[in-house]
Image (cartoon, rainbow, N blue to C red; front, side, top):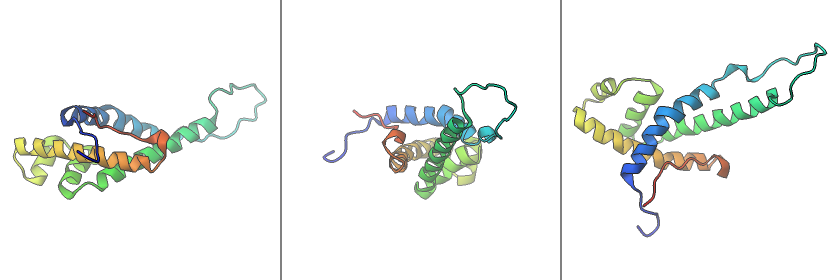
Amino acid sequence: MIFFPEIDEKETLVKVKAFFKYDFRKLERLAGYDGVISSPSFDGLPHSTGKSPDNYFVNHASYAELLKAIKTAIETCTDGNKAILKGCYIHNLTNLQVQLRIGYSRSYYYTLKDKAYLEFADRLLIETAKLGDENIIDLHVYK
């Protein structure tokens, strides 16, 4: 391509699948952590300053922003791709449940799911770039 580096689709799919299997679920847990703000302690006893509530709050806010960007990336995918990704990762449906809902054969469903993953990688790059350089998530593998 003239404007964009060539993508290794097979390896990009591996990264996107790993992202959803490991990173997405962990990020959901961290962004949803309820114990980020605690009441100050006035008991007069010394406390460790290494893990302040402020640090937890900053990390929690960053995780929440990243999670929002990921969900926006899913929402901005084309309709069929969005239905697959939302079904699997937002609504936690099985592949069979999503396949039956959209009404495609098993093999065609997995072909579509791979296309959804590739579109998601593009959309995620755009959405996380809006958050600043330190938050960019690029799941593409370039040739």
